[in-house]
Length: 307
Image (cartoon, rainbow, N blue to C red; front, side, top):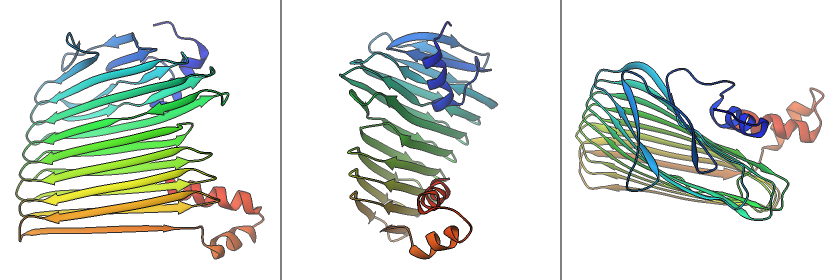
């Protein structure tokens, strides 16, 4: 797996990889397979009907991880993949994904990833996804991730998605269906600047008895960027759902939030919250009395908010 310095830097940014990872991995570079490793418990198979891979985790697999990053260095590349994860029963695994684009051309570079998770009974999955872009400003970086989750009985999944730099346009769609006793935690962090646009759409169906979800989004919109947050939690049984969207707006940015909850059962307990506002003046003053400039104080507040 020979990679140039730019590709190695992108891997560090999106997957915290400084070398070839231990365990199972599949690395995609400029639309092609750049490296793959399987283990006794985790198999990775190339799809034959469309671009992408199947990841099969054997029942009972514990304390194992897999890395499936995508990196793009070729300006104008339009990359689309379908990755399906089949997690057996009674597993405990961590999946590190993410996409990094270095676009030094004049064309649009784009990655659309469709990830489908089929999580077996009583299994636990931690999914970490980071999107990052860079370039000289002439070309545009576009990422449109789609995540589809089916959580089996007693299953648990925690999703951590982060986009804090360099993505000019993104539409992020996540849908989930939960069986009895299943729990889904979603933590999203987004920062936009310039004229960037970010849209998030969450739809969670709490179908199972005693299923639950907690959807948390934190974002910062700077300069002339635009953001839109949409969520819909549907309680179809005895269940608990919570949606929270907090955003800091700066400069000439625009932020919208449309949280929705729908109870289709008298035993559904659903809550939504949304808050958008500027950085509080007293926070700035407090940090500036410690010797920080106004800009430094803003950066400290933003970094703490997104941590």
